[in-house]
Image 1 (cartoon, helix red, strand yellow):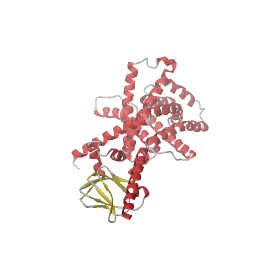
Image 2 (cartoon, rainbow, N blue to C red):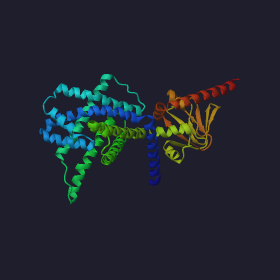
Image 3 (tube, rainbow, N blue to C red):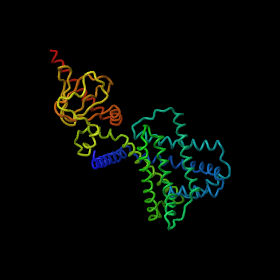
Image 4 (cartoon, helix red, strand yellow):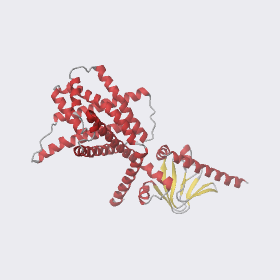
Length: 411
């Protein structure tokens, strides 16, 4: 494949994924899910900060250092954060009223947030959560502890790598960029990437969860700047809430942040199911989607010469096929059972039942077929219930037609 064709395939694939992600974002009603996550996230934020204060005070000791580190982190991630809340939490933590039982209760209080995140991803991947209650709670608890550790490490990085004034030399520019932008960016990617790795109901490759983490982090960075600009040009936004204005702005920010998180998760999910997206279009609409789909289908393609045997009766049946061009003859012995022209599929019975082929298939002319593996077929069926109905209708029609032919031969 030439470099030019490779770039075209990447662009076509990216367009397909983005289009599917925007569609599934709306269909899955992810802004409503973001509202639920914002509620749980808002309730979990205070316990998270309080536990971070306890952990940091244990490692750093100085209350002023701990306060400054957390203040910098919270303002970086939550532009509308009211530092008076941090003052109250700092007062509680340094009075020594947080014991082991209190820490455990605070962690447990945050587990519904982890459960809501897990449910949101399960919905995207169309995978039900089949896990015992106590096991799911232990996983949620372990995840919350891990996120807490990442949050603490990010705060500690503010202590050991304090903001540096940007000077005129290259070294000071580089140091300022690293401390101000690169370290928080990498920590954000690590935080989101860990979330995707832990909560994804399917096994993702490293580049799939990394893509989701980078997309979410970039969207968060853009949203943060836009949110700051919006507040600067609309200082009275939320004025009707009076003394609760800071809380209102915090909830708004958390709400849109989770919207960005879910959109990034949809992009990641559709990257995972990219092959299934292509094959679904092929089964549903043939090659009528245009050049982009036709170009991307080539990776599943097999070319057959005139008279070439695709498979024989009794062969293992681990794939089904869709005719892209030409036609295929299905026969048993000397009896022709069917001819599969363009846009027709065959071989699904052996795939569904995991049994040997009951017929043979041979190309009538020069033919191209697309191969659908069992893995992709399972993904298609799980995510597209309407496809199951279409397959059943087609199978019933073919069975009836085959029975009529066999009955006519016996007569």
